[in-house]
Image (cartoon, rainbow, N blue to C red):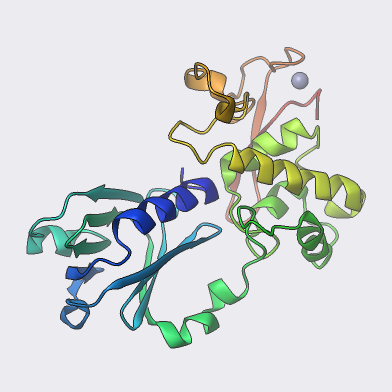
Length: 265
Ligand SMILES: [Zn+2]
């Protein structure tokens, strides 16, 4: 499931392979944008789970949702049938990038993109070099006090980049009940929660499957399968710390599955 770490990884890859290149074909939502052919890819940027690609005068906004995928391949002619089926297709003289099943693709005018409501309301990006957990805490305090901490972590207006996997993992690592209202949690604990989220996501910018049970940046063999995570998708299995069966319940609107250990948290 794409979260901020994936999108930042995509931005790094696209930065290397698309930026400075000339567009040879451009399709968005089944429509060919001929006026963008011949333009250069100027910049690629991740903001939380949003990806922004600047092509000539346009800024392309992509959100992968839960199912979206990106594939980057060698340059070459792009078949119209492929361009028309992809959520977004940017072919250049350096590489071809194809997005599939992305629920949000918008071609904006770069000059007006800052006013986009979803982008304008985004909280600080957990993977930005200047991310400050205190800024996320201030935004968390602006939410209704009864907001449960599980859904709070998914609120991109508070901090951008966290998705459903990190939500459960971070709460387990900080021993917090996902159903606790934000009003019952002190500023120091909230700041620690966001700092932990930032640390985990940074540790997962490498070319491995998302792992929270160990720091893969230190090298060594990767844990396999469900051993990579503490609680996510481990309902009914024993907690790695205390042996209590992990539980799962829907939380928030729209409901998203939260996994937790009822003894440790
Ligand atoms: Zn436990």
